[in-house]
Image (cartoon, rainbow, N blue to C red):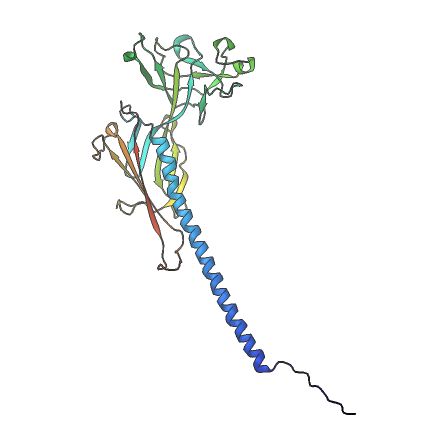
Length: 306
């Protein structure tokens, strides 16, 4: 009987080395792709963040500046990188006028019928100002005007606006109304039902927070001329520079003819130019590696010019 011995075949050292080399090449190629993808997504994130920063300027400033009345003295001061102005903070109607016409009661901010008779960003405080609609002595529109600015001389206090006025519908609402105290007596033609508009001295400026290397759009409130701490509301942007082509935020104030003006009462249009740069160098296929910068130009036409 013939017995044939079968030899088991295994991998030779050469074959194993060849496979390991192939695996190494494939793994290296995959890692390069992953690293490129990581750099691409990181760069994309930086680009999106920078453009969002620019859009913040386009959303925040126009809404606050559009209602300015330069002729009415709403611009206190202006420079190439800042503006001090009277910011509209709320509106209400007069429920009743006190003795001496130095106080007035207004409805509460929350009413069961959802009527927004009183609404504000923040409650009027000492140092704020207000304008009150004055219908004049006749029914003609020609003698209608806004009385003000009237200084608010005390924080709002509890007041009563009876349900009989039609502005409140429950006893709770009537008793949670609010009393305003101000420094100028209301005109004799001002009556309950007339509108009150509230304002606060505010400021926007390109600034560098203490301890930071970055520059931001800052916002500051200055009731009664006493300014609080400036807070960053958008950014970062490029650093301030007297070179208008390189600065992070530039205001250009123009009159009704389009000419640049330094007179606050002549401003009819404000051009806002913002410039930002990515936080890190951008690494994307098809373009050289480096920081990417972009700009945004917003033009705000002031509504209240008469």
